[in-house]
Length: 528
Image 1 (tube, rainbow, N blue to C red):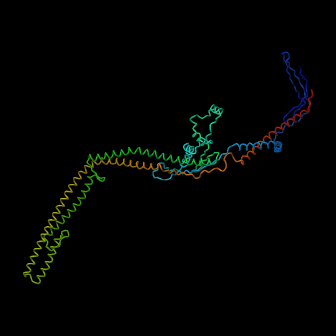
Image 2 (tube, rainbow, N blue to C red; image 1 turned 90 degrees about the vertical axis):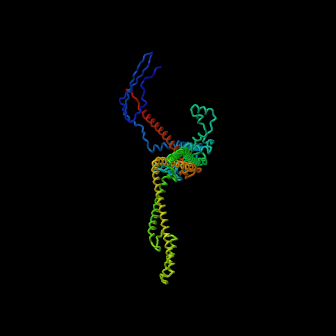
Image 3 (cartoon, rainbow, N blue to C red; image 1 turned 60 degrees about the horizontal axis):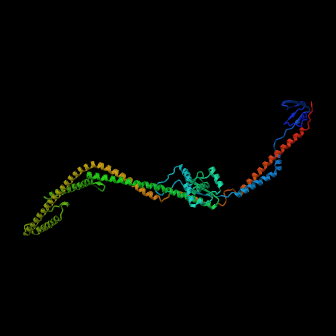
């Protein structure tokens, strides 16, 4: 078949922004063909003559008028976009199950209640420890121990929302097994699975610069959310009380375990003290050695005996001095006796009578002789009483002096014994100090053990709920149609506007390309 290789007119040229001179344009074309295995080449040349042509390029600038025109032309797409997005939003809101949120607020005071002076777990918060304590309580609320109490108390393992029943489809089970999504047997405990679901539905956070903890629970039933939130608060208090009781119990058991050893140590120390006293003959009464008490008593007795001997000696000297005195001479009070007083009174009365009778009768009257004889008898009796008083005073002095000497001798012996005991008392005091130390430790542990046993039944945590959970009146998810529908409307309108603008831009490009081709066809190619 032979191809027509004759020159043909130029159909058109598209030029971007410029002027093309057609006076001396030559178009050359080379054709290759193979004839019986031999390549042949033909070259054709065509000269084009004409006037210079100004070619205007396509204007790609975008102004508000063009945008408005494109949006107006694509208004139908905007309406369809709005309807599509609103329909999708309504369908999504209809298919999504509603969820409701309830929350409680717990106040954690860093300073515990001061119930006992010697509290085991008492906290003295420092300037920067309160925040750390509150954050720790947040972790405690999120812990498995607290949430597991909630799962068991509310039986959430039997709730389909927290524990979905296993699929009965062999296909789904097979796919899960192939992909490794099937939980092992050890991890299929219903309580643990419900616990994992509860963790996902529970949010615990502490607002900044406060000691208040917000516990939020989200479920598909308002009453269930409120019940779970309140139960979490109760479980948290129960866990705190159990932890403090456990701490007190461990401390009490530890103290009780040490009490037996401490009691044995005190008994051993007491036996050593008793044995040492027996070996060294150190007898004590009322906490004092008998030798020390005797020494003190003898000192007191010696002082008393010395005073008594001095008084007896003074009475003896006075009695000896009154021996030469007259019968009517007054005597010291210490030498007075009833017998001496009677005799002196009789002598005084007889002396007055004798003096009166001598005045009346005279000294030589016979009656005066009898009066004088009575006076001599009374003087003799008085002198005899003086001698008796002197003998009595002498005997009293002798007894007092002997008693003083005896006491002094006993005191010297007691001093010698005390000196001997003092050397032995050094070791005794060391043993007694050891005994007192062990007794103090033992009594402290014994008292502390009793206190810790009582603390097992006390809870001094200063934590309380300041806001209980109530059933939610409005769902928390999905959002309200008042929010979703305007957003869907805006997205649909934006989507439709975008489509309208793209389609309008495509139409404008095609229209510009057709106009340029039509103008280029007005030129003819002329052979040289």
